[in-house]
Image 1 (spheres, rainbow, N blue to C red):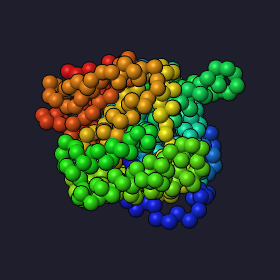
Image 2: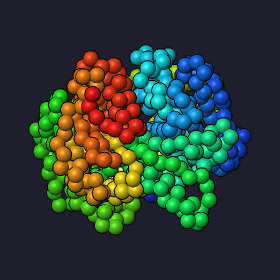
Image 3: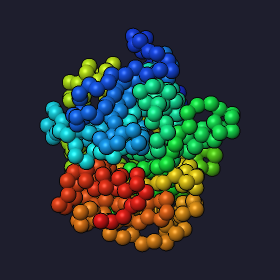
Image 4: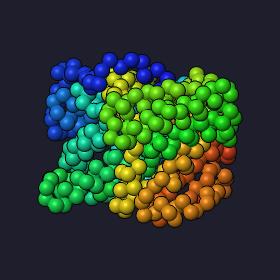
Length: 461
C-alpha cells in the first residue's frame, strides 16, 4: 500500500528528518522482545500458536510484530515476513485486509477466519516498520529503504535470538512486501550482504536463510515505469481513458519536456542530491499521476475516488489493542514517516540493480500485480522487464505471457523462467489478496500464486 500521494507534497519546510521522541513512558528492553502469547485474537484455529508485541531496537525505538504459526507443520514450515509500504503504512493492512488468519468484515467491526490465509502453509510474521508506523513507536530516524533494511535486520536478530522463535532460524525465509519494488530488493540484498559478512567473520549474528522474494504491485525503476501511468490512463481493461483529453495531453508533455519528469529522474540518477530526487518525486507525482487518475480510485480504477474498500481496520484494532499488547494508538499511515522518505526522494531511486543482484544470488522472485491498480500499474511493471540485467532476464523476456488459471477459471496472465516469475492478476486492485475473480473467492488467486512460489513451481491449473 502506498500512501495517498495527492496531498503529501505541500511545502515540506526543510531536508531534515522529522522525529518523535515522546517514548519515555514505555518500559523497553533494548535488544529483547516483549511478547503477548496466544491472545486468542484473529487466529482461532485450535492449537495454532500466535504472539504479538515489540522488539526494542533501543530504549527509544520499538518495532511492533504479530506472528502466526503455520496451520500445518509449523516446525518445518518456512518463515514469511510481510511488510506493507507507503512508505509509512502499517503491515496490519496486509494481515487484516489481505492474507492474514482473519479478515476484516465489510462493516469494519469484526473479523472472520480466512480460509486462504498465508499461514495455511507458512509461519507468517507481520511487522510494522519503520519505527513510528502502526503500533511501532519511538524516534523516527528512517528516511530511506536502506535505513529501513538495517532496522529490520536488527529486529530479526532480536526476534530469532528469542527462545520462542530461535528454531525458525534454520527454516527457509521468505520476504513478501508492498512498496515492494523498493523494500523487497533492498531488504533482500541487505540480508544477503549481512549473511556474507557473517560468513567472512567480519560481522556476527544469525544468518537469514533467504530463499524467496515476493513483490506486490511494486515501483522498482521509475524511469521505465512512469510512462506506464500515461499508457494505462489512455488504455486499460476497465476505464479508458481515465482522465479528460486535456489532462492526458498535459501529462504527456510534462513527462518529456525539457526539465520535465523524465529529465528530473535522469538528473537524480546522474548523482543528484536528495533534494533533486525529492523535487523529481513531487513534480512527477503532482504533474503526471494526479492529472491522470481523474475521479477514480488510484488503487482500484473501477471505483470512485471515495472508495471504502478494502474496509477500514482501525476501529477493530482499537477494540483489541490491550489484548494483543499494543502500547500506542495506531494510525493506518504515519505522515511523518512518509515525509521523511519524501525528503530523501526514496520513491524515485531505482532499485533495479538490487533486484538483479538478488535474482543472481539465487533467490526465487515472484513479481505480481493487479491489473485494476493505477498507482503501480501492470503496464509500468511490464515496461521494466526489458531493463533487467540479471541472468534470467533474457529468457524471461523472450517468453510470451500465458493464461493463468485457478480451479480452471481464468485468473490472469503469467510467465516464469527458472527463479523469476510474474503474474498479472485480472480484476485485482493494489492489494491483490483483497480481491477474487469470476467464480473465485476473495484471496484465492493470491493464495495460489503465493503457495506455488513458496514451493518453487508457478503454473496454471
